[in-house]
Image 1 (spheres, rainbow, N blue to C red):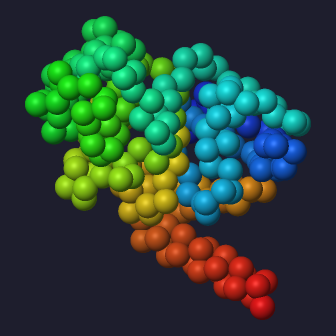
Image 2 (cartoon, helix red, strand yellow; image 1 turned 120 degrees about the vertical axis):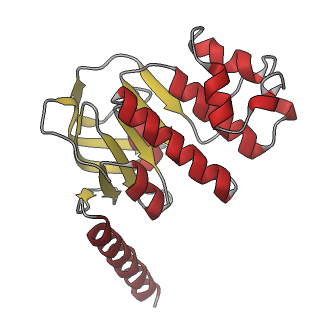
Length: 230
């Protein structure tokens, strides 16, 4: 985990409530994102992590509260790859930025030999890496990543995390990523939050303290769930 200097928020979320299919998913959420910071969001499945990303991307409305910020373009890496099927790997990346360094990105992610392949010829892990390369090539004001390093072999996963961290530091990226991997969050993010559906709980900046608090939170949550089922 790194440190982010205090500064103006590029994004501010105030007391928002969001529903999906008549069910309240998020309620009373407050959040501030500083320019140049990378934030990781942890949380149980179905708690609303992807919904929060969609709110930031202005893909879904809020029932109440407000979302304000000095940002325009958003780069969004979805859980599914969403590659254009009739374009090659290289063409998919250049689709979002015709000046992108595709050779460099593909080399870093171990995809040099795949640049002329089409999405249907890629494994799920390869498609995930191409999606990451494409998202990094699109120079948005905020980058959103939904489980960006899942379904990757461990060596490729670590390499992908390293590439993202390097680019984030070099280009002063502002990013929010959703993950279930605590070590991933600690490695790539400046700040870590646990989303509960009605709160965003900030974790300590010290890695060991963060590990302990995250572990304690989820153990306590599991115990509460077990007690509730008895």
